[in-house]
Length: 105
Image: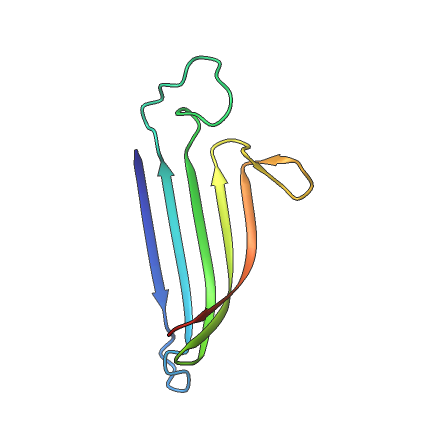
């Protein structure tokens, strides 16, 4: 197995915001089996085509100490067409926009 994960978070140095606004980014790349020991002619998810990556970028706002919300874009990429679009077509990329909310207790 081999992989890497990178994460960063940035709060703009604007006095009015007082760390209420956050920009974040994350990138993951992972290959669960680098041995490439799949039988010749095999199809489907196996050791020769199982690498995948994830990219996330988002903007979050924290109006109160216990509540935050934001928007994020997430792109998951597979080595082959293992994902399926809403139209039912195979694809190697899945991209989505998310509305995130969080309550801290």
